[in-house]
Length: 172
Image 1: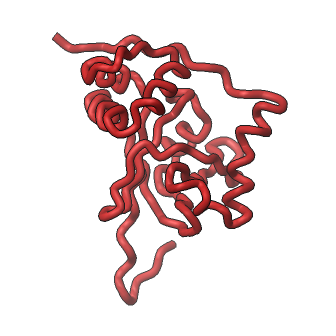
Image 2: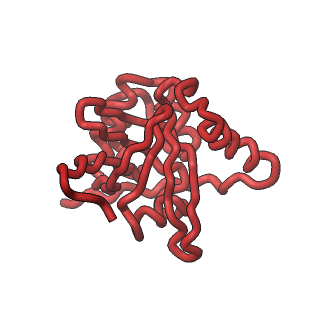
């Protein structure tokens, strides 16, 4: 029997001064202060699927694999977030982590991968995991099973660094 998680009720995107406050970390990255964010945030560059304009958003890093340079992020607004939809249209992009830029390709995690990701995140950062679930209107009682259930309904994206070009080749 196939399991279909109940989609969470997503919060509305902030407006007014809350939107300005939410955008403040972008300014920190632009000012070269990315390293002060403790490796917990990254700046995602993306291209508007309708406008074609460059866009930027700061996202919390849910998981980071430094040896492979792979970052996993979650969309608090699900698959309707502009950055998420823009990556669906153009998965090759750039992230800034600290003060370094990395060419990456976005891979959208399946529900079971999301379950694994959330269980791992909750084991490492239980308070942050509780806040994320609360924000998304998901119930989690602290058990691994509840974290996995929550993770099945969260839109996770893995940003995998593209291999460096070989000598004599160039990127378009």
